[in-house]
Image 1: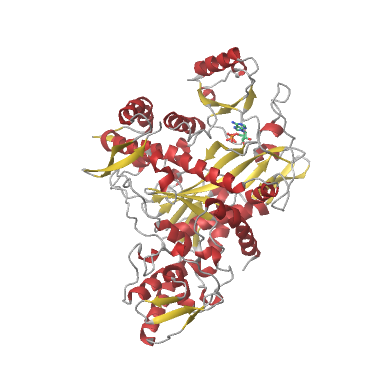
Image 2 (image 1 turned 120 degrees about the vertical axis):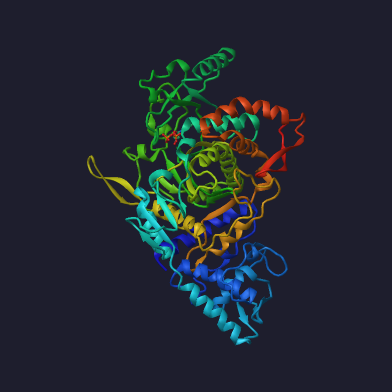
Length: 639
Ligand code: ADP
């Protein structure tokens, strides 16, 4: 085990204590296993061993020659209990059955179907075989396992990975998968793109790490629009996004509203932050205190901007403002599956914070947390430690806050809620983009994507969404001034720690060997049934431990896990499905995302008004399920 593994394990164990508890969820069985166990069962090829684990378990379970079990079968034991309900501690004695324990486990004894073997747990938590009979069937299981182990490793095309290449290479190496740095003539299992879905236009199968339309959807203006729509429908639920105006089209509204507020109460002294639409890394951002201070902007592109209420009272550490970079994986859009990395980064300002005043408005090192800006400050502290310096791990900051008596469980659960609600806000339009690029019936890859959420904690600990990055930097080096004015990229242990974990575990979750056909397949613009969604991904989260060779997953499933709490917010998605079905494709004329935006903007209030009943009651609206069918889906309507 490399140092990196050792560090990650210790680190993630620490993370577990706040992340898991905060959510009051079942404890993952894999996470309970000591990282070093069971050495005997570790396959030289993790991906193969994962396949082997699955196949062998099914073979053993079913006692017949099939190499693949039916989807979903692995999730339950004979008593119908979910694996996640079962505590499993200690090491496993029997190497190949060991992996099956995750699926079949009972506390006490385990019957391995079709083999006649019974495993019994000892008081120390280990499992021992107490009826090692029926050698023929055992041998068959082992043969199956050996064949499965020989399966080819998962292939990854890294030729378009750009700045994420270093972290990706390390991840692939840890997984013992096969990298194709120059691409491959035949298809790969996974394609890793550095920028966009369209980095490679010739992919007909496999999985790509970008969704079509994600870049467009997450630009500042489009994100603000999507959040605004949700704020209009669910104002209380979406109060984590600062009030925003889109420039130039809403300049007059902005001007009038702010002047009016000031006229009514002269003591109001709001500050606003202006962000160019296409900008990143703090480029072109400035603060104003009066609408009249908006800078005249030249050029058609430069005119597009978002002006946003500035959060004046952020939480400070060491008197410095900081923000959180959280990595979120959209594992699938249909059905919606969201994972959050338990570890993230925090980026610190380099000049002590003061509430905005006319004097300090232009102090970027005080107000903007961007690493790319602050790295040029003489106060920037490079540190190899995770809990000092200008870039720290999220866990180190949360621990520090916990030590001060902050309820970090509440903070963490508010962050999860913010993430799920934000994803729900962007998915409807994203579906329209997706449909335009990969219409049903056209061969194409499936997509997943890692997003970077930038979150600010207010002084009262409420998380606020600043923006979502479709291409969060996955660089594991940082810029350092090696001589006056000379900058070089040097390895950054904090970045490596967090980012390699996120990429590696994303790959583990996307391992085609683990992929099970979903019960909710995309059916020509269909929508999953409005009812409860089974937590099949829970098992994937657990089963991809590759025999214990790797640290437990740093990605935590939050959706569909929390479907019940958030499903009622997915109202626009139902409308998007109707749009795609009835307007999206009409002969050769396709109405795309812009038309959908207009449709939502002008159509949603009347659609919703006709659906909404007074008093926050429930209505049944049709939910498209597949061609020619509709199913009822309950939507909670805000009062
Ligand atoms: P960019 O994509 O250019 O980084 P952001 O929206 O992330 O743009 O803003 C840059 C920085 O400005 C953030 O990291 C944060 O420190 C600060 N910031 C952005 N919006 C707000 C806000 N509404 N209130 C307070 N600070 C903000």
